[in-house]
Length: 171
Image 1 (spheres, rainbow, N blue to C red):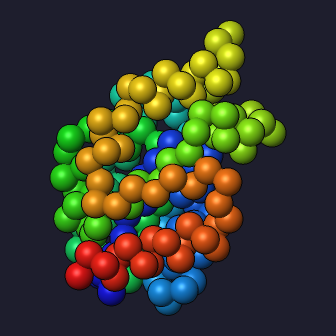
Image 2: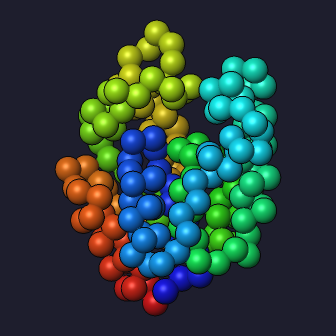
């Protein structure tokens, strides 16, 4: 199996749930990039966005990714926008194969219905419209992955099994 695995995808695609299960099945450590940023900054992601701006958040994101290069036995779940920066994508590839999880906008909106703490979902625009815009803006970056899996209407267990199967097939 790979030394480490990186999971990308939009918010609500299942990165954390699938990542945790993959880590358990592989005997790897689960690492959440956003949690590392919060720990380093001593502030919530919302606070970082509101007080320091998205550019500062993206800088912290890149710094944390660089610090993880060379670490083995890890399943890394990234934030939905981490893929935008080409340097982040380069760093992700140094960490391990990049697995992109996706879902339909309708599915993402349903999964995020009870979530109020996502800075990029704030404002007047409908949640579906925001998600659709983000998906369109980021599609080319999400496509720059080694494995892509649509998680729509699939259980976490089924997605994790599919990721493992596809990783084995890559060898």
